[in-house]
Amino acid sequence: MESSGSREGITDFTRNAHDAIKAIFNTIKFKPKYVLDADIAKCFDKINHNVLLSKLNTFPTICRQIRAWLKAGVIDFSEYNLKEKSDNTTLMGVPQGGTISPLLANIALHGMENRIKQVALSLPGSLAANYTAISLIRFADDFVILHKDLSVIQRCQQIITEWLSELGLELKPSKTRISHTLNMYEGQVGFDFLGFTVRQFPVGKYHSGKSSNGKLLGYKTLITPSKTKLKTHTQKIGKLIDGHKSVPQSDLIAHLNPVIRGWTNYYSGVVSKRIFNQADTTLFSQLKAWAEHRHPNKSSRWSCQKYWQTVGSDNWVFKPHNQKIRLLKHRETRIVKHIQVQGSRSPFDGDWVYWSSRMGKHPEASKRMATLLKMQKGKCTHCGLFFNHGDLMEIDHKIPRSSCGKDSYDNLQLLHGHCHDAKTAADKVAVTIPEIDEDYLNCNPFQL
Image 1 (tube, rainbow, N blue to C red):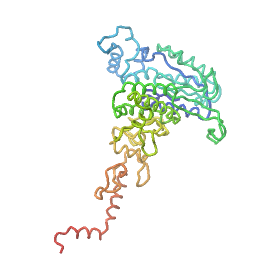
Image 2 (cartoon, rainbow, N blue to C red; image 1 turned 90 degrees about the vertical axis):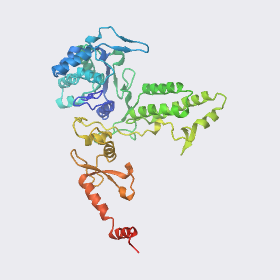
Image 3 (cartoon, helix red, strand yellow; image 1 turned 180 degrees about the vertical axis):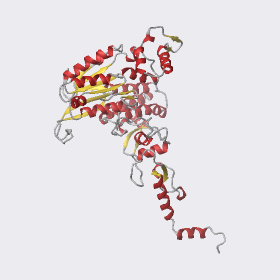
Image 4 (cartoon, rainbow, N blue to C red; image 1 turned 60 degrees about the horizontal axis):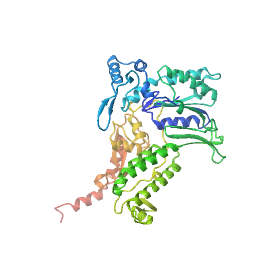
């Protein structure tokens, strides 16, 4: 069973939305399953304080501080005034908007996994098979339960409803439903989770996925950005463009690029190519309307020639003349496979070699060293062996600075300390005696 949250997991706090989606893919890639797609109604507002504090099991001083946070009034920052809401929400719920809120909510929901485990253990058949057949993947207050048997899913829904009632919570009917990943159930196939659409499609043998022993499955599992999130994204861009009708083109690009980059990066680990193309098509229409609005007396062709340039083989690059800044396209984002965090790994376990290789950054490693670790996939380029936690690592210039080597990433490599010593010694040997003599004679002030 997997549990993810706003930086939460069963064994650590490294989980994120992408790890949750990866866990779903691993659960269904070899077998279609029924899914309970559930959402807890007003989870952050209705969590029982006493239940939450009892689960903390921490020092009295910390417990008192958290109780004070939970009972704090809610401040409403409006445009013209500042007022305190007078309601009775201080006996339940957690303050929202801060980094502590998701953590407290996850603590309150801790135990859901164990309750589902009890269901698995009560099923007929092999104990080990039942334990692995039922899966719970949770991210904050959103969760899904997967199993091949519809009756098991229905039973889980009933048990989760009872378990949540003990916390003062309930499932939100409008966002809780049962579906199937491959077949039609209650008028729908697949489900949406965390902005992704998860679905399996029947395909022929040339496109079919394969089981672990190479047998054709007859279907393919695809995870894509959801249509709802695509619509929300294009609407956000549209509002941004409408709000900057009179600004220079370069300023509009500066506002749009971070939005495009952030959205495409979030979906870069799934099957997003077709959705990215759709987003680019919509974006072009929005920008074309923006350009024509600025020059109502000019033709559409004139507007396109003014705001779109040719760069390389691309004739439709939205950029100003004689400036480097240009608008990013959704489809330019590379689709890369997301690597799920290993079981019990945590950024706080001290193994910054692993985390630097995975994320390209770590608080205990310099930016340059962490980037090189990721570029080299955790391997020393001299000996080809993986770096281990505790190894002495040094940054080396492939072409020495004394030989006019650049201080850029294409001329840098990360080596074991002893590998660096060996390479440095080899570099010195490469400077031959005749070359030294010639250099010496050329700069000798006493030569005739």
